[in-house]
Image (cartoon, rainbow, N blue to C red; front, side, top):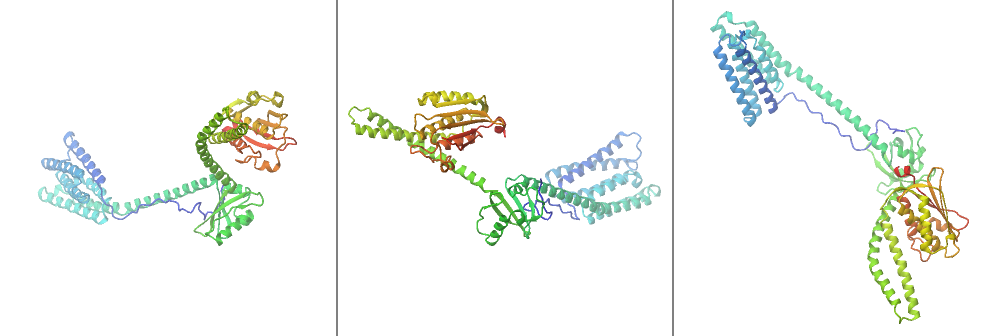
Length: 547
């Protein structure tokens, strides 16, 4: 069962983070990494020209017009490139200044190499086109066309110079004109159409990433809402449910109801609580009970920007239980601290009473008073021990144990220590295994049997311990006695702390038993009985402990 939602509603109020699309401006500015790439290109170009000129025996182009001047221009180009490497490293002068100076020198030196190799007919003209294409990616359209004009004038100028020095046979004005046109065309194409196309592709790519991010975030939000322990319901301005998660469906008993639907049809009590919150926004929301299920829910209303309301639902009984557990944990720590502080002076009092009882000069009335004091010090000490057991109950040692054998051993020890007849403690067991802390199980049995003797001070009291396997394969322990039993009124508060039906009881025995059972994922209950009391402990199996 998934989340039913209207597309116009987002999962939460916080707007989804969007990826910032970088702005594409008409003017690109150079940077230091770009200059380093330009320099690497120059070095590769110069190495290639040197290899062709000095290593190729049959080359007839490079330096064909004036070899010595070609070598000087090539060496000057190498020196200039190495100087650029140093200037880029120290980043002096500025990146823009170096960029334009380098391109000016590139045009001059490449044109010089081209002139010494036969002019336009040498085939070195494309080097100017490559250099201009790279420049146009980092300069404005105006600067690109300016450098195209400078390169064209230099090429035309060197062709006119060759016409004067070499003669008509050494020039080709048609090829020069074509090269000039290509220079302008390259500058414009790389600055306007190509850059515009790249910008459009970048924007489309960024938009697609934004759409993908939004879809991923929406899907993630849905998964988070689906797995929340709290119920989430989103209603529009007309109180129609547009979004509801599985937890809310379970709390409102709407597992098979199609959405959208009006809130009144799902839960009239929630609609009443919503309207009450709208009338008094500052008033704290109160839990309400669902008539159909009797469940208590605590709502929280959050107004949305589109006029709707996000409703967060929590199980109020579960919240109260958690609060009670926290309160009892704090109480346990406080009680343990107090118990430790009381134990030392109590030990001193008990020791003093014992010494006074051993005095030969004490009369019968004082002896009776000392006996009362001793009995009450023992009672206080028992309360302290119960409190300390309560505070140390987290020490667990789960293992698979033979429950029937533990009950047999406990019965033997209980008869010896309590000095009762074997006939008054009946044991009926079948071979049974369970996952439980054996020390905790022994304490549970001891407290139950001790309570039976305390509340039924009769020598003829009979206690029965039975152990058997249920249909689910779990081990069940029954502790029964034939005493006076427990009233229905007392059963309701039987496991509450400090609640006792005996004047000498501490009210912590059954509470500790319940806490120990909870720690071992066991269940204890007081069953109705025609005679005496009947307690049942259902132990957990290995599968239950692993769940």
